[in-house]
Image 1 (cartoon, rainbow, N blue to C red):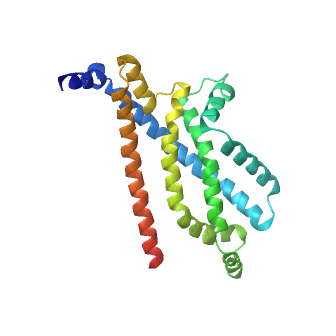
Image 2 (cartoon, rainbow, N blue to C red):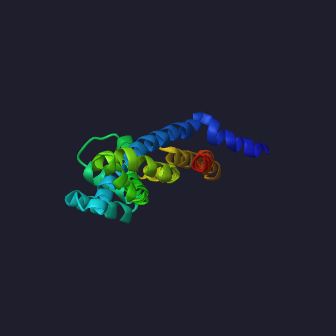
Image 3 (cartoon, one colour):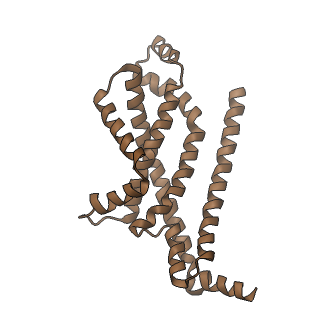
Length: 230
């Protein structure tokens, strides 16, 4: 028991090594929050372009570039995208690594959000567009006031789950020497030569956050079901 307590002290308390985890957690949460914002904005824009083309045949050029974006981003690993953005795109530019992480994960998430949102839009009955036209609304206003609110309600749980997935994906940010939560645990391991405690601590922190977010998603889904029945 004394040996285990000593290991805990050496791993986390001595030299304030626990700060590697807390600082890393802050970095992870910052990347996640801002990447989610970028992913949502980009995803909704791409989804609207794709859905508009599917419904009306318009926006062919934008739809072409949207399909390329989706194919490239969804067809390559997020870690490779992160490395390309940092070591190739920003190779000759002095740039903050946290910004690179936000950009890379935001762009990656946007592709998945786009398909989630597009599926939500396409699931709405075409008669809703006719209803909008009968009210004197043009296509953009029909999409904004009638289609998107219904689609958003349908896809909200899926979007929330995408946020959870994004949080876990940020664990590869250490490949560009960004000191996120996972990297913080790895730094402690490299200093103490003790792998078990720091890595288990990292896993538990992720687990607590994900379980908490999953619980919120579950409550959200139950509330939406109740409102549908009501």
